[in-house]
Length: 358
Image 1: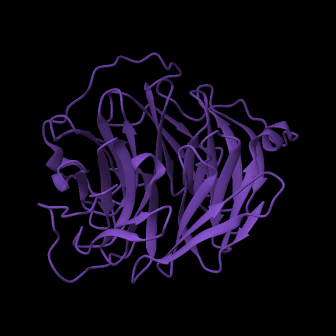
Image 2: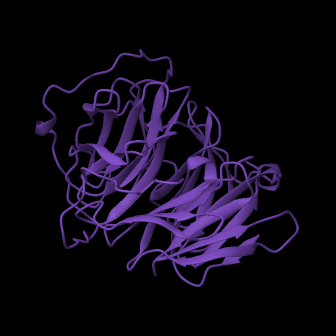
């Protein structure tokens, strides 16, 4: 199933319980579609959400609203039913907003091009904390709900772990020349996997974030721009050569390439609420919805059982946390992404009516 978007998409997200999918475009538009088996997708909304590119898109509040972040530094909440603007925070960040994720029912996190991560409390309608651990853009974020820790990857070549309970930086990896672009948590919380610019998957053991414990190189030299957890042992990768692959973790192996989006890089991957559909976007201005049953039943063209250079083949690591004593000493990388600076100061003290009425 293909949806022609008319322009370059930056992000895709599925409704948490309904057959809806949203995407944000480079021209600032937010698009919402309803999909159904053996039927053409129906566009429900087309909203000019931002003056500049709409870089990140997330359903919030049980799917009643969509939050978008933009290169114009703003965050917008849009009503799913009507398309009406619920609230617009023009200066959420001082530079372009690059990533937004859900944390709890009442909290979201946003990351920007300067490496700043902000936590937003929807009950108090305010920014409740700001983390300034990174020096370059936030490439991806994920959340460990059991331990209430937020993980972020950055263009500065590091991975950070922040506690949203204590509002403290718990750990930061040493500088890695292989720039991390994507991140997921697997193996029941014992492993953190990062996709990188060279295509190497970096495996970190939970609690030991200074350096990776394993590297898997079989996807190289194509960058892994998108990672999506399928289950505790398998993930789906989106690479710069347009291939979408099913990959096993510990043992590390390419189980099989399952789809080819196009000849262009796969920017983002997402699952529908029931995991029956996989959504992918790329530079071909198309959102593709893949039937997971068909993908997984397809013939395996590549199977590799070899594992890359590894410090440890075991996934039974200690649950202890190595808290960095001097985060400022971490080496820094060279930024590879342009930063969009916005006029005006960021509003970090009040969300105003951002989530009012959701």
